[in-house]
Length: 202
Ligand code: MG
Image 1 (tube, rainbow, N blue to C red):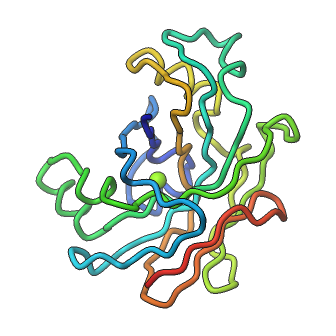
Image 2: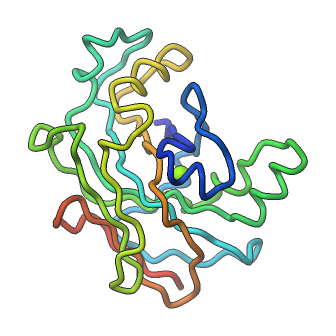
Image 3: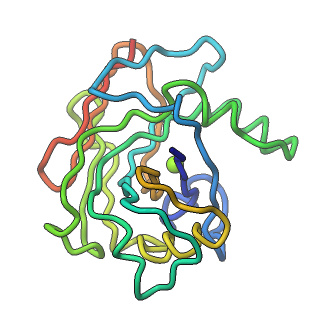
């Protein structure tokens, strides 16, 4: 099982990171050991002093495929979920400065808390609102209408380079409003008004 993640897929988030919008999807991966399931607590790692949340809609790939054409892209997923792309921002900044890969900043153990899934067929994929709540306060408000590269584009693009296997996941990118976490915080992810995920930082 592979976890694909998309960087800078919402213009306002790209701007808050001090970068421009990419002209093709910015892809990185996390190993399966990054997953944190069943609303389990996340333990703040000792290697960072600036852990950030990034709330994201996640696609679950339902069948194997490669070189997927646009007209078939929507056949490759039935379910969407909510996940956090937890990021050691201080390590990421160092990696970027050195021009190094950023796995230690984004792909570490439990860096991908992931909640429940719902049928994508209950939604218009170009108008899904989602929010991140930190200690009960809304800190990120996203809508897939604002995606730079939409779900189907991502499925086609990723499959040019990587063979999809059943169960692969795509973290589709975070909207603006990312920020730091501290021990004791409670993070929650909502799609519309449905709570999908809760994660306490310990
Ligand atoms: Mg992200």
